[in-house]
Amino acid sequence: MMKPATPTEEQRLQQFIKELTALSKKTGIVIEAIGGVSIVEPEELKALRYLGEVGTGDIEPRF
Image (cartoon, rainbow, N blue to C red; front, side, top):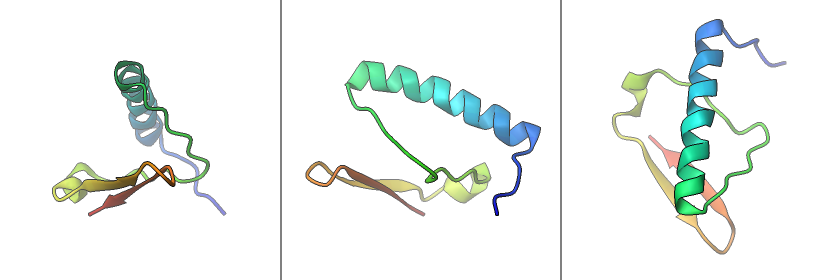
C-alpha cells in the first residue's frame, strides 16, 4: 500500500513536473512513468546520475 504524500512532497513533485515539462519542450524528449517516481531528500542525490538507452527507452537513476 502506498503512503500518502506529504504537502511538501506534493509541492516538490508539482515543481518537478513543471520543470520537466519545460525540459521536454526544449529537448523533444518525453518521459512516461507509471509508478516509478521516488521522492528523496536532496542530500541523497550527491552522486546521482542516470543511465539511458535509446533502443529500449529505459532511463534508470543510479545513486
